[in-house]
Amino acid sequence: MEKLRTENIKLKLNYRSQSNNGWPKIRVWINDTLIDSFDADQTTWETFVDVDLRGGNNSLRIEHHGKDLAKESNPDKFFELEKCYINDVDLKHHIHKFRQIADEVNPPPEHSHYLGHNGYLEIKFDSPVDQWIKTLFNVHDDTMHGQQTTRKVLEEVKEFFGL
Image 1 (cartoon, rainbow, N blue to C red):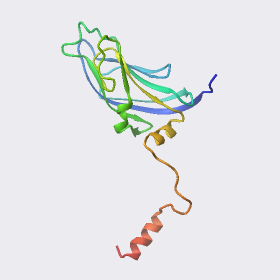
Image 2: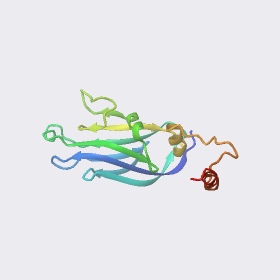
Image 3: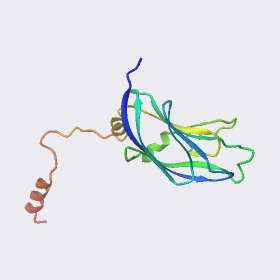
Image 4: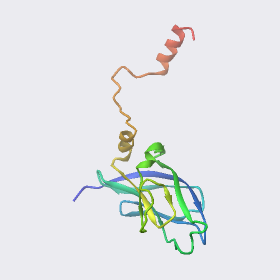
């Protein structure tokens, strides 16, 4: 059995939504753990959570559920993810790595963030989460010893050039 690692994660979602016979019902999951269930009646949702993670192959899932397509499609009741922050880092252009899985016969495009149906958005990630984020954004801690820039060095350069 794979060893689990407990991590404290801060999640924040910025989204658009529209009500029709009630607001969209959203559940947020990490792996098989339900993190929260809420009505998407705001534009932001955030939480801190301690969660057990595997070394790799973890998933964050944002699920839209409970919509009656026959009654709640005109106007459309929907949830659309606009931004996702993990540990205060905006995933920015990596948000396209969320994959959409729909509970319907004619599914929408896989990388659409618009959930106008019952289904979910999912992104895979590794643990530790902060290391996964660094890898995602290609951030390396490979500065050679003695090459760190400090305020003192900057002040000396400024003084030398008379700036």
